[in-house]
Length: 175
Image 1 (cartoon, rainbow, N blue to C red):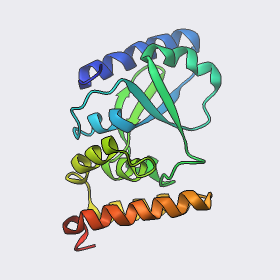
Image 2: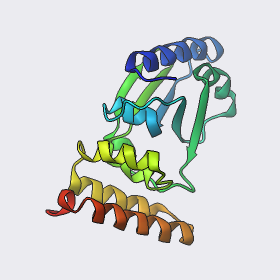
Image 3: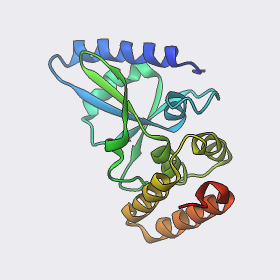
Image 4: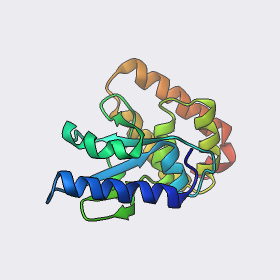
């Protein structure tokens, strides 16, 4: 199980080495989400065993290098609510010879966690909300909601967004 920033960085160093050997001269940018994104934001100490990345239509060949990470998943932005401007708020976690790894803002992570909204997600949100900007969070959630094209998912996301804002009324009171 992975719990430390140092362990995460070591995994990306290994991926960078493999990527450089397999695909010399190529560069890839990875955008982390999920539990790893929470750890990178110093908003979680819960162990997580997988890496979640936002799927930006990467070439399937890159999976050979990414397998060094162990378990990893790609989040399909066609079916998940995510603010289309998420990249403007990311920060660099690791930059090597062939890969650059970014992590999402607390606001973008919260908006994405509303897609599933499990008990684990609710725990992560509780930690993330304390380091988020409420006005920005509301904007990001609205943009993420708007990005959904599948109407039943849109309705469910709106309900979850309303529940979150109601549960954290004190956070959103000045918004």
